[in-house]
Image (cartoon, rainbow, N blue to C red; front, side, top):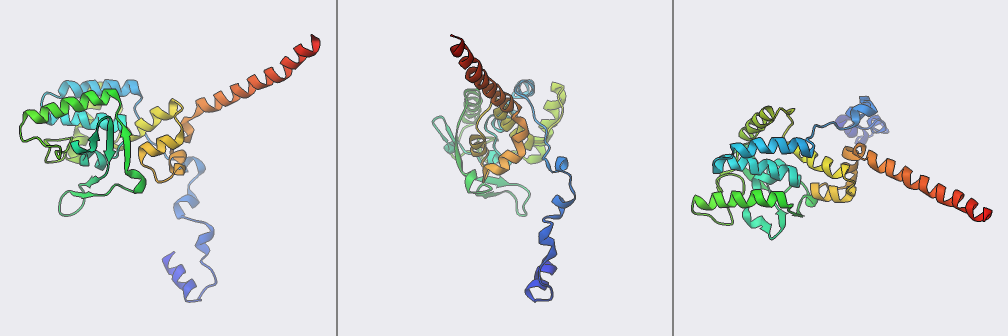
Length: 252
């Protein structure tokens, strides 16, 4: 594609023909294959998973993993966003997402801005997560030297390692008798729960920090079967009211 663009600029060819077919991946995939697939936990499944994690949270270190997965499920944050969270990001009932941490770059952990401008967001914290966060803070304070600049997950100064988080994820899933899902799929679990409850796609996009609702819709549109049924039910009711109601009036 780069070569053909160059050839077009140099007037060797009139037009780059690849523009007509778009990205190669989209050109050969079927519509079904283009639909993003992902795994997720229902709330009932996550409750089983979280109970195993809670039982193993007998120390600050282990409770940090429990806290990590609860944030992922209840808030829908990306892995790096969870790693970067500080207690100073909690303002009353609100969690502010302002940064991310990448662990796969050369030179160690690197704190960066979130993925895009929309990823900078403020989210209300649900009651179940508040309880988990309260316990996590108590455990960190008990170790001394606590400040609001402590990272929420971990001992406050060092982030949990991605590899260890995945290790705990596998253990919890296996002991709970559940399928294993990726860390990122907890984010999908959050969105799926909201979709199935009929939450507006714009609010879901905002909570996930997507740059536009189109991304959210392409990923989760198939999770809105209830909306289709509800729309048909409303239209059917209108038909009964309109026609059958008028007939009754005419008869009278």
